[in-house]
Length: 478
Image (tube, rainbow, N blue to C red; front, side):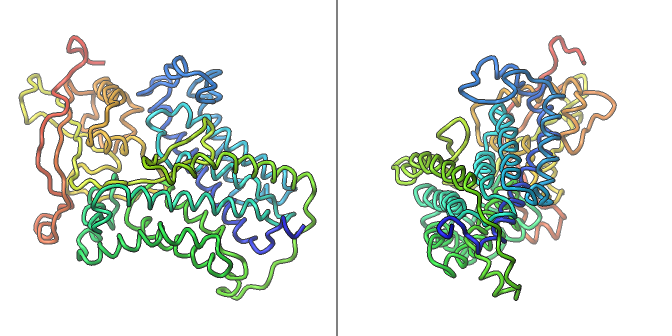
């Protein structure tokens, strides 16, 4: 079936299936390490409370039947094991129904986590992972040629991801239109990495060039994903290079990595063989009729769902990172429509002094990824996602829902060990403090001269008090 088979995209299939599976593996490991503390039986936003308020049909999840931390861990460990097998390419050695079933199981398991994850799972890359996992399920196995319609739908997903992000920026803040956005972004992004300080101090002409390059990569290049080869391969390579720069300069979980993986859907084997000098692969076997029918039905279903994100791309009020159905399939994407020009950080402190007015008694809790101690170099965590640290960035911007933060302060007063393990440093190892508070600071990167003089990566000044000193009811300790 020449019209159905995309025989020149075997490398693309391998990268798409194994790369998406690798992102699922990271997502499930993140759930194992963080979900019980954030959303579990004693979590900051317990799942059981959520499922009492939201019905299954509104947010489908296995946990509407029953939730326990043990059940979560069984589901997440099972998902991690299955994802690891797909990364190794083992199910792909079987008939095409097996990798299809494996990816659909991953999709269902992770959907169950995301749909009860509330604000901790409200990021666009969660929906992106779910959609990508569902789509690559229909790429088949090594026994058959990759289906052309699925390869093209992967490009349509990449197009929405890149072009949608580009439109969000052009329609957003003036800083994207006057090319000054990158004067600030490296310093004010949610979680800078070790390279961010150095890039921030590059000349302004370089940052203006970064913005121009971004506009070209997101507003022009996506249309060439559907051009004849080798133009489509060149477009895919440009996406890979630009996303690689974002990997180098920031911590955006697996967003940039999965975008790189999707870009391989535009790169054909002929281009790869030309560059690497490889021999042509052996021809695939005959595609079974049942597989053709299932793939065409799934693609037709996804195309119907594409109407809503397509309309959104040209809407006056374009939605960013929006799902139009409860299964997070065929979504709208985009980020950083505006760039914050100042960086505010919430610093959580505790005191064991009898008098909370004694400033010498206050010691800061250190988070793993977000800035705190000015002398600490920013770290690299992506593609792993530190969910608590990311929400602390939104908290400093003035997010409305602060229930999770109120519970975090309560857990610190209780000396909850599971919560403390989410942090980098606990200044009260022998017992919880009497009081906790939260102050807001204005942070900026130190200048090269300041860093040479002090060794500090950040300079900060206090803005005010977010939460005044609080203690457990009655002033007792847990």
